[in-house]
Image (cartoon, rainbow, N blue to C red):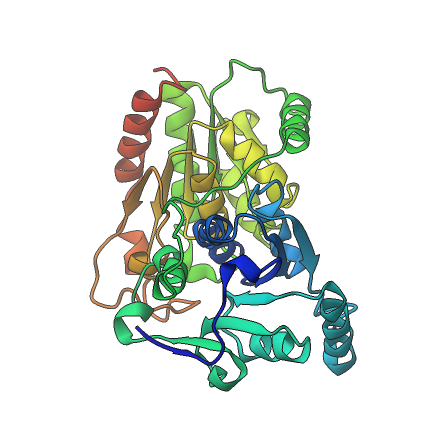
Length: 359
């Protein structure tokens, strides 16, 4: 990759680093290997992460981050006045180096206005002149899996790269909250749990049909005597309710939709034998706590956004996929071509190999 450096960085002189994180939960999880690599490259520096409030929970308890700053662009940092306020806050930290994992022009502008002397990132969105070191993407770089894309930025600079598997670290406090929540729902320590995420905030095209999630739940409850957890954002409540209404043994369903923040979700998923999910941010959280994932992909590009870690990727190959559309304009064939039998067999095989659920 082409790298233009206007001002070199001596790692020994760097004491305070700002990392501008990305804005989506799944993408945030996929930056964790790069963040681990930055820590290895700058072991003595204080590392501060700047992120939007809704992704901050991904990094709670991350040992490679010393401080998290919130960029509240819908609140105190909204508009031009908010941008100025954020700039002033960053200046007060006297950062030596900004590493921009986010590709936006605004990220480089903010670091420049904050007078951070070294500003490094991909030279995207015409922001190369605002960076002291700009790494330019070629076509092959843009086609990398997101984990490798963020790692490639470090590699282009000759820095240490972290291990490839993303990691989310449930805290003791989050684990305690998870135990209490499950106890309130009548879950005992010996109960087998399988989690579903039947929704998707991106759009209905990414959703495997709700009636198939319900049919899968019925079969797993019958064969494994498990409890099935439904997870998702508040916006997924209607889909979750549809699934629950179609399940014969609704008493075996626990609906946690909209009831978990990211740290609590991570701790709950770590307790599960398998996580069956559409392509969502939660999918990456589950994989990053080590839970085996059965990921159902349709319109999105598995080559760049599939989970990393122990997983099974289910796709029905059709000429129009990946289309990256939010809503399917035809018959949703990429999703309806995936049958309950397909998913059921992979879940059973995964349960057998983990030993968390017996049958």
